[in-house]
Image (cartoon, rainbow, N blue to C red; front, side, top):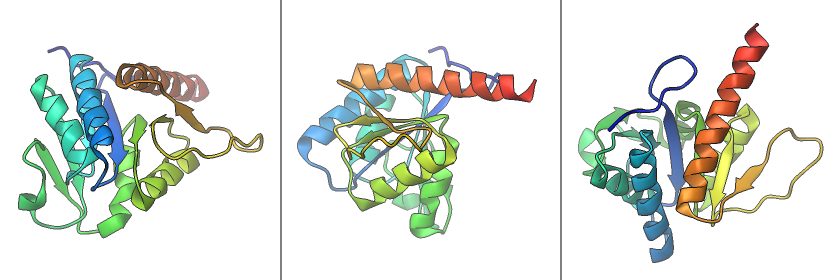
Length: 176
């Protein structure tokens, strides 16, 4: 599997966020997103636990992908069996900031209040958020970015990769 690079020549990482106890539909979407990301050569970062997090990593691993779990606790044994690289933060929900900063873009699938928190951190920091059957926030003219809605797992992955590259290109242009 060939890995896609970001603007700095490093492997492209996309963060995937979603609830720990989602409905079956969200699990299916997350597995498909994980497969699509791995097949595209993207590394998956998530919260490392159950639900959407476990499903996206299961999908990624089924396609030979690499997964990172940004975990809230201090015990690597808490990580889903599909996590390759468990990052222990000991920070509880505060780890949400680290997770969304790890990805060059974020895909939000379903989700409860923790997911909403992650969406808020990402949007506030200028990180593109692609939504797949997740929170629907109103667009505001006074805010630079919003959740970009996707129609399918493949569409979410395509949009996330494009948004990550666009973000990197804008940052590079600003630096020159």
